[in-house]
Image (cartoon, rainbow, N blue to C red; front, side, top):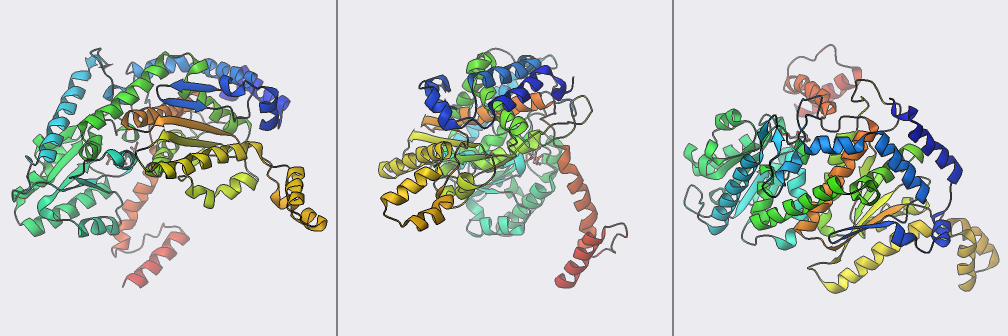
Length: 545
Ligand code: G6Q
């Protein structure tokens, strides 16, 4: 049945009309136990969702909707390895990559766990060899720098995690990431490196991605120009891929290929061999702790009733805002500088998964799907876009992410914590015009000045947020955090009736780039080009002469 025809959907619409714009201040004043009732815990994570525009009844209705959408069955179908990526005919089993213990995980009647463990063992041995200096470059020198060449899912997860956990990094090895086909990225990265001590990881599930292959060939050229011997490639290049034939054609020894499988989607692949750069940056033990944290979140997601299930709760809150209260975006604001790539990572995870209009059964949606995800670390965001959150016209739910303890300076951390708590409180409470007036009176301002400034000093408040408070954001906790968002996105995709696991929307641009490239290189213009593209091409040709 169409989602918006479900009685559970319609009940939510009626409920929205009933509770209207009830202010969060009122909701807190009416219930002294609101915090206790609207918090959930999992390991060293406390999710405070009390600053949301919801009442007990809202949650009940949202859970009814999730049940009407068969969410429980879909969760089981994913974990059981069913081909729920229907447009590509694949299972969706990133959870198998972090599965612990001896129980099998079956895909098409085959237990995938022995192969998963074999690749983890191979990664462990390789990381140890690089870290100990046993793995040497062509000239016999140990490796000092690793360059991961990949894009999208073969880049964003590894960069985000390596940055997030850099307090725990391996001090001897520097890890760099090159993704953009813009020559600036690879040229600037290689400029500071020594070919004799540099190892390249070519990370590409398909091993056909234009940007990655172009960068990999440039890296190969740079290496061979310095070392002058084709056989150097074997000591300076490894591959992470599902495509052994293409890896061999590039000249990489299959012994130096770390395999993964088509049931691992690109944006869910940091848990696979694609995480090799993370393991080299931090050590294999840290990488395994990341997997363990994700596995613990998987177990929580699979086994916990909706009432206390963290991913389900976050997903349903999002549905409330995006489908019933008109919010179009979701801000992700980590109060942790090292999580500076988390918003970009979640942008891909969420927007590539749920930015869809086709329904699973081949129709089109008549409701909003994936929100725009954006954000920056606090406190920096406070000095930039928070003005709009506090006094703009839009409803923007915010996820605040912060840890009680960090390995960094304590005094700075106290300030960071105070700011994080202050922002969510300010967004929730706001400041009435009367309160603004009273403040100015206390400051001794003249009456006409008070009236002139009062509107500008008024904050409407009622801006919702979640706070994800961690005891500490180490590898285990980060693994759990990423899995939490993965599952949140999964739940929303199920409710919105889209296929969250494909990304057909990125193909059209690739096709057009393929047609335009020969014209950029000098071929005659294609008469079927639209006037804007033809005009831009003509100007480019003049300026590039
Ligand atoms: C993610 C997408 C996409 C993909 C890149 C890189 O889910 O599939 O971001 O990861 O296009 O693809 P390759 O790993 O095949 O180079």
